[in-house]
Amino acid sequence: MKHSCCFKKHALFAMSKSWKTTAIVTIIVSLCLGALFVEAQTKIIRRALDDLIYDNKNHYLPCDKLPTAVEVNRVVHEHQNMVEAIKKVNPGLVGVEIDSTTCPGRTDLLIWYASHENRLEIEKIIGDDTFFGVPYRLSNR
Image 1 (tube, rainbow, N blue to C red):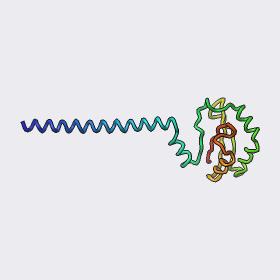
Image 2 (image 1 turned 60 degrees about the vertical axis):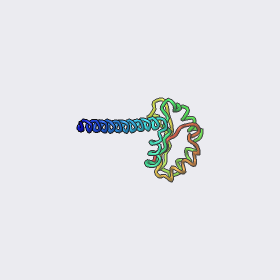
Image 3 (image 1 turned 45 degrees about the vertical axis):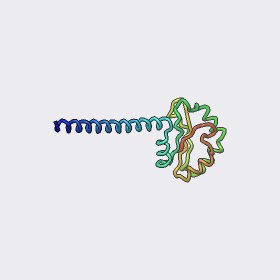
Image 4 (image 1 turned 180 degrees about the horizontal axis):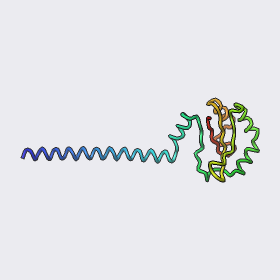
């Protein structure tokens, strides 16, 4: 009889341990799924990597939210003085391109530069999250 009592206690302990393991795994999986959902909505990890590690800035807009090439060309033409001011930040090492290769039929601006100091100057010149309504990306090359 004593032996069967110990067996019951051991079985209870084993079930309790199994339940704890299941609960911990469920919590970990839920946290991971929650983090994936938040990342998909906000791009917070991607933004941090781009900014802090790569010294880049991206707008993360889907192609259907980007303006047409006609619109971007018009804005760039109307603000050519601003484009030239950006290029003069570091001649030959800073450039402004209309990117039509990433999203067929849609475009944005790609501004590339050589250093973090260049990026800060460019952001100061633009002074907004868009270049007169046109989304832009900053790329440290």
